[in-house]
Length: 229
Image (tube, rainbow, N blue to C red; front, side):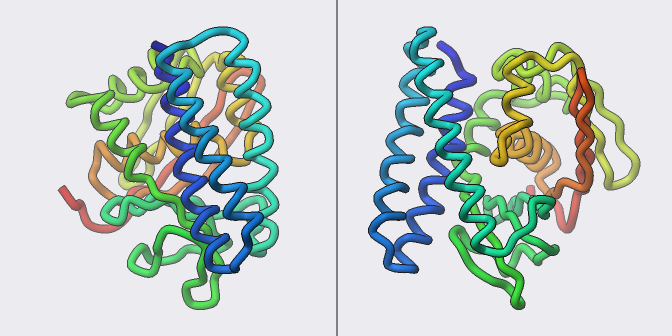
């Protein structure tokens, strides 16, 4: 079984739900149709995870490229800049993209505004469940290695440092899979880093900075608010 395709499939389905909500709100049959198609793609990813073959991998690359194009257009239409905020609201089990910080109490899944700030909210429920069942209990570094080295195979080493509420994670010696992910606007690496950290600490968490080099990807995150566990 190729669990990395299950990992990506869950991201795709979460995005499809967001597109569908937006399409219904703006009464666009075209967007709803696209969302339904994208959800099928997510299911294909998951099925491929249980029956992996090389031709399937090539086919799925084209699907994820198309998905990226749709998400980029959606974010641009919402007026959200390319260097946007990305946070996981743990209690609400929702990721959101926005131009400025928004309190998690004001976030829902879908497309909306909070205090005149536009955002895109994506369900994190299935991704958090996947992380919970995949990593079990243990140290943070062990959980990160389980997801990103053993399951997703995006790198060959991981280092973690923490200073108060800031946590820095460096993915060392990226594989081709890892480089392909960080080039994507959706970037499953970002979503799953947030999910692993939020699951481990049971808190809201946001991405503060990202640094990409020739061989590594370093992301710094901030824990926020109350512990919900």
